[in-house]
Figure 1 (tube, helix red, strand yellow):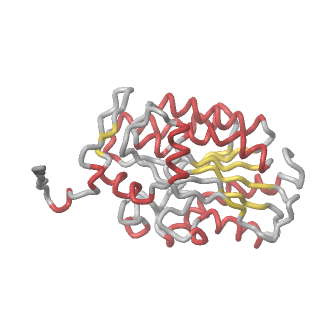
Figure 2 (cartoon, rainbow, N blue to C red):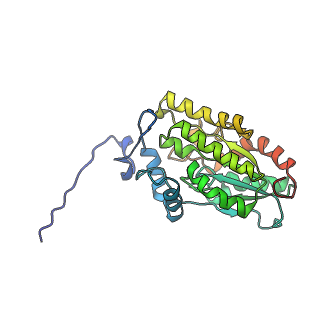
Length: 276
């Protein structure tokens, strides 16, 4: 049998060379936001795609297109092996920014939070349920099981970045976040909402609408708010990995400092019983 090998050569400036999956991938904003290339996202995330992340994404976003920013790294464990099983739980429900993407897990801000809690003689046990590439819808699908199994007193919600990177309508992201917060509060937990910002290439109209939604969700639900999780980090290239999206190990203490003044009162207010 005669086989013909067809070789297609792509030519591009050196700075434009990206992960092959990104050559044909764009974000489509159904709300009218400008399309944005997924080059940086695909190259950063695709190599770490695994079974856990793919399964969570299929369940939460059945209509998601291929080559979207999905990765399968999951933190998914309690960080204080010495804490009593009766210790109050602080649950972190996030994406790659909380799953220590590209880093050893013990260098991530969530592990640093557990160490800070112990240094302040607080009893809480931190459970990191973050999955790289997760969306708000993915968090909604996982939330009931997490609430039933962990019975947290405090939940840090750090989601929405991947929704924005895909150009999902801000109104949809906001509505899903409100549902996520309200379901958590209904279970008796206090909520800290951590906001993020998008790269500027998504256009001013879309990025401004996206940035406002976290404050709106906090106002409507009464959740505590950290407006910018990466404040003082995202602006400093030295604190970001080569993909320009994920913080380095050196940035993790700064991220913790952004959160600590808001999470500390929640820790001090909570007692040893679930739902206090």
